[in-house]
Image (tube, rainbow, N blue to C red; front, side, top):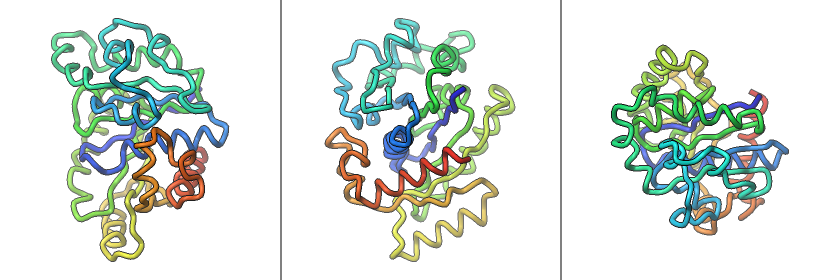
Length: 252
């Protein structure tokens, strides 16, 4: 039975997509079979794996509306060991399309149940907001992993996210756990990065991963080549960090 992890934070630009792509690729490099689900209308995870998001017949949008089966919208082996349910800008209309739909919080979960046993890990990249897509991701997931950027406003919005996770746990998915927090864009040369880490640790009794994802130019470049960092530059600090994070996730 695979583990399903939602990567969520309603703040944009904190490294959710980077983490979704590179954690998945690192898990695959360690021999795990991974399915990535892109639930963000921006479709950056989709293009980050080199898929042309604008030329797709079946995406998560068609899946949620019941216009295709989950098998029909999985793109197999976008890289070795990683399959993908893609997304594009059409997904932005989901909220409106789902008005009045019964049990709409569970649409994704009901679909994923068909294939869950075929994967060791399912990684869901959530949109940067607490909307119906994020709720669907959380009802599908076993746990939520929260990337936090090492900057001044890191804690802002985090209590809201934890509140949402607890609400979903209470009302929709009693199995949901907080997987933990991973610090991204960490710069060991700045006092600020260290202060943010200390600050978050003192405020939260959540699990915090030992691995910190550094600020890394190669990590920022990789998506424009449609590759995860461990294929684009396996020797970079970013690639090494995600391999270490994958190891921690597997052992958790």
